[in-house]
Each structure stands twice: as C-alpha cells, then as structure tokens.
Image (cartoon, rainbow, N blue to C red; front, side, top):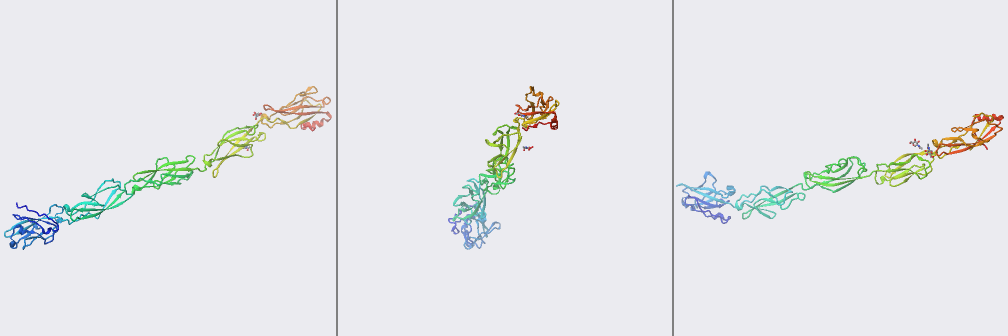
Length: 563
Ligand SMILES: *[C@@H]1O[C@H](CO)[C@@H](O)[C@H](O)[C@H]1NC(C)=O
Ligand SMILES: *[C@@H]1O[C@H](CO)[C@@H](O)[C@H](O)[C@H]1NC(C)=O
C-alpha cells in the first residue's frame, strides 16, 4: 500500500514555517505537517525532491496542484524549484473546527505520462484564538436561601483552538480552577445586606503565550422569605377613656419586613377571636379602633396578642395592652338596708332607726361618695364601716306634733363633674299613750233650779286627748262620793261617751243649796291615763229659776268656775 510517511513534529511554532521534514514515498504519496496561518508563498516542502521528480521536466510535464472535486487550491507549485507553496490561507479552525486532526488534501498532477500524487497537509493548531464568552456579561440569579457550597453552572467560554490551546481553566478573584465553569457559594448570601454583585470571570487557555477572555458575572441575589415581620415594639400600651365613641383610633401597630415583594407585605391580625367584638384591627394599616361600647366597670384592661404575617405567612407577635380610663358615668346608688318604721314616739335621742349603704361602680375619686341628710328633721347620718351609714334620731319625737317625716338622703361622688342621687325615706311616728285626757276647764259650775225634773240635763263637760285611737278615746265617769249621806250617783249621772251630766232626782233648795261632783276622764289606752275635774252644782230658788233655766236650756254646758 502506498501509505505511510513520517510527519514532522514542529519544534517551535513560531519558526516552524521553514523547518520541515518531508518523506519521500515510493509510490508517490506525500505528507506534510505545517502550522496553520502560514503566509502565502511560504514553502511547505520541496515536493519535487520528496517525490524524486526531475526538476527540469516539471514544466514540460505540466506539473500542477489540483484538488478532488474542484475544491480550494491551498497550495501552489514553484516549477523552477519544485517547492510546494502556501497559496490560500489555511485556518485550522475554519477548516476543521474542533477536530483533533486536520488534514488538507491536495493532488499533484503530472502529464506525459500521467502521474497523480496525493498530498496530505496536516494543519497544526496554533494559539490564535482567545477564550470567549457568549456575552460581555452573564446575568445570574441566586436565591439568598442557597446553601454554602451550592454550585451553579455558568456558560462556558469557547476557544476556537484545540488541545492545550483551548480553554484550560477559569479564574475568579485570584482563585483558579480547572475546566468546569461553575460558581461555588463560599458563604451564604443575604439579600438584605447586598442585593447584587459583579464578578470578573477569566477563562484561560493553555497556549503559549497564554490567551484569556473575561466576562462580568452580574449576580442578582433573589429574595427568600427569610425575614419575618418585625414589630416596632414587642409590647404596645395604650389607654382609652371608657365610653369612647365607636371607631375611635386607639393605637397603630406597625411591623416591617426586610424582604421584598410579597415577602414583605405585612398583614395584621388579632391572635384569637375574642377581641374582635370590642376592637377592630385594620389588617393593612395596623390601626386598632373601638368596635363596641367600652365600659370600665365591665373590663378595666384588655391584653391581646397581635400577629403580623408576611405574604407567605411567616408570623411574628406583639402584645397590646389597652388600659381603660374610668369616666364618672355611674351615680352613687343608695340602698336601704334596714328601717324601723313606724318609730315609736318615745324613742330616746340617738336611737338608730335605719341603716343605708351607698355604692358607686366607678373607681378611685369617682367612687368616693359623700352622703348627707336634709336639714330640719330630727335625724342625722352617722358614717359607719365602709359605705354604711346609720340613720339616728337627734331629738325627742312627738307624734302629736309631727306624725311622719319624709327624709331625703343625698349621695354625691367626687368625680368631675360629680354625680349624685337621692332617696326619700318615709318615716311614720307610732303613737304611745303619753297624753292623759285634759278637761277644757280646770273646774266647772252648774246651776240648777229646785223642783227640776229628774233626768234633766245639768250641763256637759269635754276632755280632750290628742293620742291616737283608743289612746285618745275619752270615757267619762263619776268619782264615788257622798252628798248628804247619800251616794253622789243618786243625785247626778254622766254619759260616759258624751260627758253630758244629768240630774237623777228633783232637788230641794231648802235641803240642798250646793254640792260638789268629781268627774274623771279616762282614755282607753293600756295602761289608761286619766284626769279629774270638780263641778260645783248650785241650786237656785224657783223664783230665780227663770234666769237659771234660760241659761241652762239655751246652753247646757257647765260654766267655767269664776272663783
Ligand atoms: C311625704 O311624701 C308623701 C309622698 O311623697 C306625701 O304624700 C306626704 O305628704 C309627705 N309628708 C310630709 C310630712 O312631707
Ligand atoms: C297606744 O299606746 C300604746 C303604748 O302606750 C301602744 O302600744 C299602742 O300601739 C297605742 N295604740 C295605737 C292605736 O296607736
């Protein structure tokens, strides 16, 4: 077979153009090895010599270079010297790209006789290309949650050359590593600290001299929801007067989230449902407002948890304490705990007749209560333990003078403005049989004409008793006595109910000029009280009867004794 040959290895790529070794082939095939990019006209080898051709006959035999299939003629022939010359640029990258072996095939044709020699020109790579990245900058995104040691493949650099002349290594920040173009995370990223980074990546080939290409890596650190919202305070305190109108702004809570986008959108919520009835929390603005009637007396302080969540639900919590400020909205209330009613009129001054208690639902000053009882009644209030007072009589009572009292007790708190309330107690005074019946006159005189009719009215007396009912009911009676040796009752009688005195018999002036009758008035009390009075009865002779009878018949009362 007509193959084989020795390929000359270049010793120095710079000076190679003129240093070759060619091998003569018995059967006319020849191979050369040359560096790419040799100048036009450079000598590849002396093909005449290599093939043992007669120099003088080259022209005559129309020696020429040809190609199969009318391809590009890369070589030319110097017919005078027999040198094979470079005629067209031989760019290894253009001819063979990444192929490890790059052979250009040409043919030497001679005529007379026809002779055909194959010429194989092995085109060697020289380091004429620098590593190149696809773009000037590589945009690259890494999520901040990436772990240390994470690897990220980058677009590789390309180098038209092959072998050692191709990309051998990369360097970044003085660090160099082989082959793989990947970015390794040496340290965790924090977007909130540094959002972007510019890195200069260099790709190096192994040629001599070495060539390099660079690219800027623009790393954007993407947000990971690695920050929970943070409240501006861990405990919020607010105070709110009770009875504040609905929708009153109590406080605004606020939390911020260092992340971005949805990761930083904070939503506020009450942690638990029980506060929603009383307060509203705006989930966007963090405003806490009054949503129901606030009554200090029901609840004097509220403590609640508020959560702030970011878009992906990472929560944080704060405490909100709302102290309710008391407003003087409750008047004191007076309770009657006990009452002696009616009160006997004979109670001694200083007797406790009732107990009252005063309550005020407010607090502090607003629940301090002063209590008073109106002037002009024989009662006073005596403070006792806590908010208790005794109602005590201050003087002697007399039912016959004042039989009942309306007592007004007023309680006033010390709020500003103060509130007060009052209560009326109706006290009746109960009767005691403390008054005896009293005759209207100290003594009476009655005049009667002799020969009067038995049963005629002598006169009438009245005793008064101001006590109540039977204690004031008067009953009249004669006190037993003797007149002229006979009982007084045989002379006169008295109507027990009316006090009318009647003659029991006819009187005789000659026997009886005058006599005394003692009358008692007694009440119906128990024990009864009584008093007595004396009635002087004088008998007139018939001749002056007219005077007497006139006066008696017109006015049958006993006359006031003038003596
Ligand atoms: C007490 O009050 C009642 C009803 O308010 C009234 O009828 C009565 O006359 C009053 N009594 C006195 C002594 O003021
Ligand atoms: C009369 O007085 C007595 C005490 O002396 C008393 O107990 C009684 O209740 C009184 N009667 C009336 C009707 O007030």
